[in-house]
Image 1 (cartoon, rainbow, N blue to C red):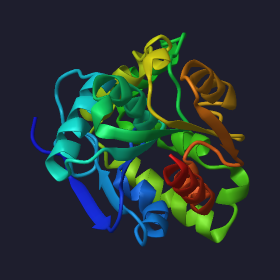
Image 2: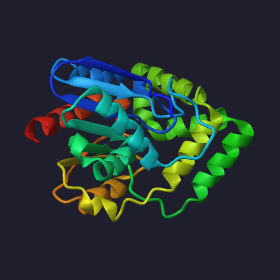
Image 3: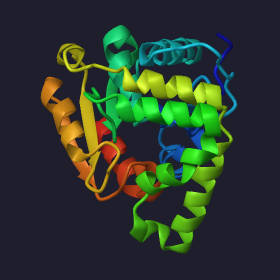
Length: 253
């Protein structure tokens, strides 16, 4: 596996930001800008996404956790805080069990621990492989941002940016990531997580509704649960609120 594409800026304790399926580190732009004056912010692109290497073989979320574990080890010898949205939040759940020594705490936002019905994922993979990523782009953006936000000038621009990132994602890599997400089951392993954990639910999230965040928080000992009035990509819709939650969590951990 070739090294991941990453950007490291700021000063202070390190916070690693992990992005969602079909997107890249740019979905964290506004949150990173708010955190960088007080923290060292390390953002990266998952394998098969952004400017990290494309893939042509299956992988799991555990593999994504191992990828970023190697990146963290290459950048610091101190425990870091790790915040992930959606697939990034799944990576956080895996990393907390596979390499807890690397972590001072984790933030799991707009994410899930298990999908009992994998049929929608299989249908999405079949569509992407036959018709391309653009064939599912409009539906994805509809899940990512609320209609109210998209009706604003800022929200319309953000929707266009996220859509462009998605359709620029390699179809084979995207499909492999879909299979990885569909296959997760962290319901039992989450009970073994022993580091400070914040779970953030989007009250208007249709992709990973609040009940999925509640399930994660209930399984992880001592986990805190907070909400943001946003859809799935809360970092794009409510960056100030998410950055504030992350900063408060880091400062009290």
